Length: 272
Image (cartoon, rainbow, N blue to C red; front, side):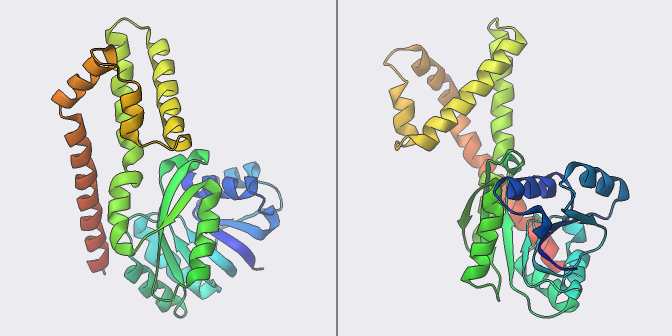
């Protein structure tokens, strides 16, 4: 029995994607989740709607999302191709399009494949993802991939060569923000706030600042200037941040993560 969309991999990202699709109006009966681990499969079946199939092996499908570990991509891609997939979207980190296409061709024939780099805020429907088209993917395949990933956040199109930069910025970016949050909470405690008060204020400050960035048609620099009075408290804090090299450290972090992503992709391309 075929399905309109099959998500292969019932981990956190796969389950989040299915939840976003359901919330976005996809009918449960058109979806299917493939999970090889029996315990995880049973847990998913208990949480998901009863008419959404959770199975152990891939069925034929109009579209397949590969949400498995990078080491499992080649075998999984070959299996979904043999099962009768029509097109594929991969969210496996670091696996290049050439490797995906080779595995799919080994399983069947040349299939349209789209490679994506999502990030963990997709777990709460606030992800940021980029998609890149493979050799045989056309505009409607990219539009399909955008519709799938758009259920859990925003999506942009980039050439595959830029996916490493996407990884360094938005893929790894949530960890940078979490580190800043840790530092702010610790700083609040240092200056006398109870931990729970410092944590609550930090989370709301980050959330509010992000909303201002998203909802106001102003550049980050303009928003920063608006809250910085000459000789005031914010100016003193910003001076300390600049003296500590925070801006440079953030740039270095994105560059380092981008280079590491590029290196891992090269390893994946040369691994038999």
